[in-house]
View 1 (cartoon, rainbow, N blue to C red):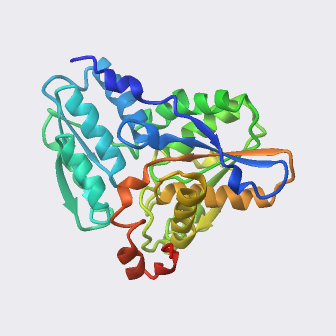
View 2 (view 1 turned 30 degrees about the vertical axis):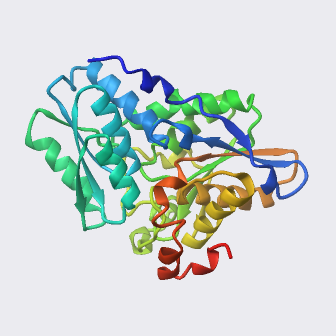
Length: 323
């Protein structure tokens, strides 16, 4: 398979101090700018890692079609990596996937299938992977290489970016690979770093972490993409968490708009949720303290939703539009 130079652009993203959001003297919020990866999200990291490891093990060959279920970002990464290596890819996405995300995936040459049932897109990908030995299912939700990729790459970078000066790390989870892998790296370096899950209202992760026996009853629809889950998956390590905090669609989307206007950062809803949660945690801390989070993807993938006045009005958040 060819050696693709673009894949060398994955990772080594900047860390930025969000100075306009510092809630009190001595308490800082820093964010890893993961939307600067080639396809505009940190999913490039896991797909490049998983594909390379799978090539080395013989699970992916020149005749392989890579298949995956994705809310959008992983699908784009799969499509980019696959096409760059001369491979085919097939991506199943949920119907809440933004038009931009689906178009990006197709632009990289992948076949895209939209699934109406909220969680069935993952099952559809898994079934496709079983149909033919020439299909390889990435299985980001259960593949141990997912958190391992984050442990080996962004987790290491965050520690080095901050020179080891980290008091807390906060992030959302969908597959759980990012927060699990990053937290493992940070905790190994400093067990005192506090790890907090930022979870959208409607996801079952926070109630599950809190030990609620009826955690499935907390499941309800929410608009933010790429955060939260309606089922427990293997890639998510709840044991590494110290705390969890909930946010709603308005919290996340309003913060995404605020980051664009105050920090010049065009990011998606999960980034907004991360920073909103980081700010809430910061309000409770005494300085000096440094809180780190990640900005997983680009806001340019959500111009038809998060930054679309008509869509915001339809979901009751029209007041967030700048006048």
